[in-house]
Length: 553
Image 1 (cartoon, helix red, strand yellow):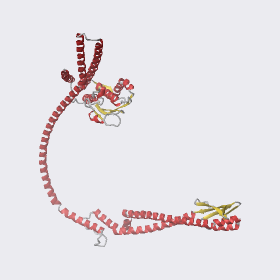
Image 2 (cartoon, rainbow, N blue to C red):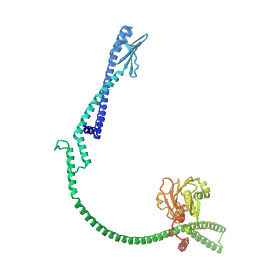
Image 3 (cartoon, one colour):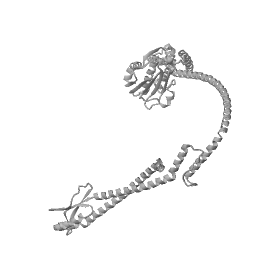
Image 4 (cartoon, rainbow, N blue to C red):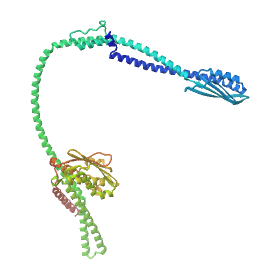
């Protein structure tokens, strides 16, 4: 008996009972709402029909009674109206007459209806009064409430009885057998057959599970007999596996030796590729320098040749006594213009050579010092204050004041100056904007985030902005060496890295340098020597000058 009670109150039984009750309650609630709403609609329609009857059968007779001042007839008619279902109060109001029946209810479920009383006489209509009718719908709602209570109670008892019957069937057919199976598995009576307390040879899911458990039991018993043979076979397999592992280990060591040899060959090939890349970069640099210097030097040669030609012309006229004052004045004017042209282009060539010299950076010529990074940036801002003010450019500094580094101060100062000048010359063509510099103090690295809100860098040159001679303002005399110099200073001198960050607002650069330059290992760089650059430039210009003079002759 106790076991049966435990089975009925088990987890499956509780879940089944609660599920049936919940589902039945929801169905009962939905159907009850539908029935009650239907009854409510019928009551409302009946009430409207009564009002239609009142409007069709009483209004005209009441109007006639008022016209005849027949108070007895009015009273009789009001008693007939008050007997209508749900009518609790009726009143007739006319000039000098007011008759009522019933009493006003305090319920909030009342509705007031007002009808004009019209008397027709000799094809003329006379307004003789007003009929007021008050209908109380509280009885309708009380009837529906009682009906709902009856439906819910009867459905609840019916559902409970059906659920208990289903629960009893569940226990009889399923739950008690599952309990027996669990007790058998808990005690692990593997040599005893699983026998359920039920009619034998019944083909259902419970019988299939019992048969499967018995078959599994027989398989385990037979498997235990084969354990010793399997153990011996496992030992043999382990010995074979160990032999194979030894052979594979020897093959792996041989492969590692071949791999080391291949790595050494790859390192040698890499060194050759690096040297080839250095030579290619040097050739590109020399070609770029020659291209940049070709224009001003060519102009100087052309102006010089033209002046020599004019001098010879003046000498010839003087020799022949044909030199006039106008010829001499024209010669002086032309000479002045030619000399101005020579001066401008020679100064431009000198500035280009000075820029090229800066590309030959060497950290050995720099002095290490410890300084406050915020103070260095403020010094740069003060030096460029006049240009920044004229162009209405504001620098926003976002960093802590106590960040100190031990590195090369002058190269870092040049990096910041070139970035700011690059923003002023290329980013703020409307001479208005802001520059934002952020400093992040890492454990051993310093991170500088530089950005502006200018026009940004054109997409077609973003991948080459750190290459030499890349610029969008060549027509304004820009050589395109600023960002290349910044790249060399950051990577070769400051031991860091710089990268361009894609941004929808202006130019954005991310710089990373070492906080202590002594902790940075010296990396061999293929730096270009300034003397070699100047020598190459001189030779190239000499060849170009000779070629141009030959062409002029």
